[in-house]
Length: 296
Image (cartoon, rainbow, N blue to C red):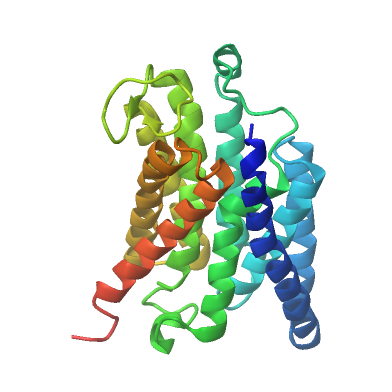
């Protein structure tokens, strides 16, 4: 449970993500309705269904489902390849994240209940959703607007792939990896070790990692990235950069948990938000040093 004195951090994360994303969806929705109604109708309709699915699966509270639907719509507007098809958008890796985290949360639930580490049955809250996938929406919206990468890298549907989508995929990969690593590790990993000291700690301890949990998290990140690359026609660069960013964020999350979270400076939502941001930062750093398409 979030400590009362740190609950403001969860509210701050939600305040950072939700208003901006909601306004962006409204503005982009108006533009797409005027210029490309099919894009608007599919994005709004499927994002609504996605939110309802998360709620029906008890993966999210009603408020969290609404938050997830807004973020989904934003990602569908900013992550797609021409010609627009619903299965060629950011919806695909998001669905992968939902499926993987839902399965991982249910995996070995009885054991986790005995340990006292099981997720609440009513699902994640709005702040948790914003902390886990909000960065992906914020970054991709900004990337589309200011074109962080040169235009020939940004071009959609080309043979060289779409490396800029690696930023959003890295954040989504980290979100899946973090949850899967924690949930699987509690069941199969045995007694975890603190990532900073390698000393054994009790299950559920912030910063505690297991070999099985970490491996499961890396595998989950790869599944999300793979799904995204297939949907978005990504190339080897996009896959490698996204996966590396997601894994970096997973490890960074554990380091934050072992340090600032254990010290009581940050709560879990703040740690998750910063970890997904670190995944994006890692992916962006890799993109800046890799050779660019068409450049000798």
